[in-house]
Amino acid sequence: MQMSEDLIRSVVQQVLNQMGTGAAPTNGSSNGKASGGDYGVFPTVEAAVDAAESAFQTFRNSSLADRKKAVSCIRNICVEQADELGRLELEETKIGRLDHKIAKLRGTIPLIPGVEYLRTDLNSGDDGLTLTDYTPFGVIGAITPVTHSLPTLAANAINMLSSGNTMVVNAHPSGSNIAAHGVRLFNKAIAEATGLENLITIIDPPTLKTAAGLFENPKIRLLVVTGGPAVARAALASKRRAIVAGPGNPPVVVDATACLDNAAKSIVIGGAFDNNLLCIGEKQVFAVAEIFDKLLDTMAKHGGFRLSAPQIESLTRAAFETGSDGKPHVNKDLVGKDPAFLAEFAGIRVPEGTQLLYGETGFDHPFVQEEQMMPFVPFVKVPNVDRAIALAKESEHDFGHTAVLHSRDVSVMSKMGKLMDCTIFVINGPSIAGLGAGGEGVPSFSIAGPTGEGVTTPLTFCRQRRTAVTGGLRFA
Ligand code: NAD
Image (tube, rainbow, N blue to C red):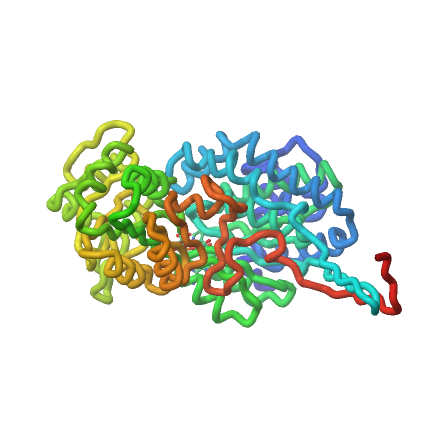
């Protein structure tokens, strides 16, 4: 008999599990292991999907109270173990900032909406009652990015389990250990609290092949893909229904009416967050000539450090490589690194505590055109706000993701909002205000622009089902 690579990997994984090696907890309930996985961690797509499918058959008949308990387990682990989990994520991915990795788990995850967000709609009239219930799809396949490996997984899980689904995760290979570790912790706690197993399963190790396998698996009812252009395109081309949270390149416009102190402070907060790894983070600024110099000076008051033109060019040579297509491509070695690290490539040392590097560039500069995910934000001087909005639109490349405006002029607000046509439009705040940090509304780590669902919530992952009770049942 010829053994497939997957089968060999599966056998090796099971032997390792029995020996108690790896990151899996060894002193808890045996529930997760009894069902053949390692608290939800499976070596093949088929094993992970089958386990999640079997879990769904039990989960669909369990109570809302159990759903709430499962979601609480995820929230509690993220909050209570934020320091450790944030450190593990940073050590593995080597991108971003420890304080913000911790903040995403301790601060944001508890705000991700859960079971309480579900509702039932009701029509009542002479002909009776009609209910619209928000019900699960079944097994959801989730692809998660390296930029927020565990936070995306945890937030997706809170949303998806709240609406009664189970899920199978294919994480980014560079963030797969922390993702699998999180799944083990979540499943173990959920099994202890509810007896439910494998509500979240994960394929470990993940590859592009396993991602493709998830796309094709007939038991997956819905795909939810969070990532860059390649995976967004692949998901949009898939036969399976997909919710796609794709890339962005968020521009900021600052006009002459803006509060410059608030604008500068906001750009630093949003652009520096996790070293600019957020898909919504400020990536380039278009400021009108009248306030340009003052705005750049004000940035320094809020933790920004200005680079000169030659320093920007030195940094650019390190930050971009010319691809075989002759175009600049982001050098991954600089993505999500600290400002002090980038500054070395600019040939300088920056003061301790520097949050963000910035400086003046032209519109065609790669730092403006590419989604670079580094804590350097280029500023482009423009003659007037109409030109600023037009260039902002062009630099966003029709992703329709996120745009930011600093202005006190309501006609400018309307004009830019309409033209940008983005899923998130933030006015007079940092980009993160669009996800509830300093603005209203719930957060999410999956902003579904291309497929239109927007900031995802438990309702995003529901099928609507209608029940009509005819014959005049009516209490009013
Ligand atoms: P990435 O595209 O490299 O990877 C994302 C996921 O897709 C990973 O799990 C990866 O293994 C998988 N993948 C990549 N190419 C694939 C392919 N051809 N087929 C199948 N799977 C594939 O992105 P990343 O570096 O992990 O994350 C950063 C990107 O994700 C940025 O573009 C950012 O804007 C975007 N992002 C978007 C959102 C959102 O909510 N819209 C949130 C976070 C990140």
